[in-house]
Image 1 (cartoon, rainbow, N blue to C red):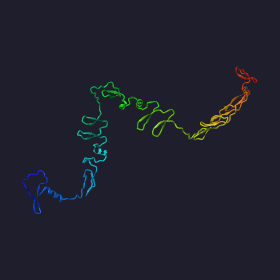
Image 2 (cartoon, rainbow, N blue to C red):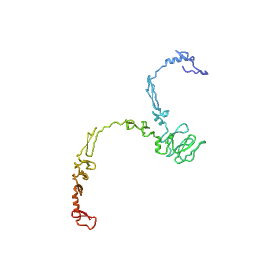
Image 3 (tube, rainbow, N blue to C red):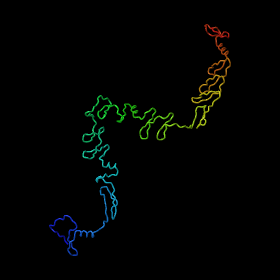
Length: 360
């Protein structure tokens, strides 16, 4: 049956299924409703999807599980690229850098007046970041003008090295920055250190408290020593020590039991005297005569003693030899024999007057 055009029919406003349609059934022309036609089509024209595929195209996204041939699930993966509204990255830092306009060391990101970010390259050496009223720009610092608003007071009489400080109403010249503003409030290093130091009392020590800051350690009790527990330092009573080795170098004294309980023994000659037989070594002289007179033996040699003198003897020296005891008669005889035997021509001179010592 060919299509037949029926002219001048009004357009249907809506379809409710009761509309009639011309049809041919078993060679006979009949009229059926739109609902009947739709039911016949639904009942006679059915099928099955055999394969469905999915692709992310050039977006950077992927679909796992493709194709689905009967029943299945597509799993979306991949990284959405910038051209499709993503970042092309998988971490916050990498994503920021992918979108950032920064290209060179020292760049800044600033607004460009069109609600978007743009790159501001690093300025020339010595330049400062300043505002021209519309955007941020690098400029030579040049001279600085301090503008004092109405109602504020700028004191006069500045001194070299002073800086400006504000209390919220007035501007003043100050020489030291207070601690509350990042300074020390002092003008020399000793006072500056003391103003920041946690020390409050004589004997305090400054130690680290394990949080990268300093704290005060008060002086310990009398006799206590500074000790470590491997983490902190503290004052503690000293523990008893143990002697592990004792020695003595220099002669005369020997050390027994050189470990825990040493004993010292002095060795020498009874009746002798200790002396240095070198610059750093002691020795003992031999027995000295009782009642003898001790005299030196010279460098490296022991001292000695004379023999015992008798009653009436006197000790006399001998050039290059030890002193000796002599009687007074021998001494006077030797003196008389050394005097002239004739009367001297001058007065006041000793002479041997026939075995008698006289004065002229």
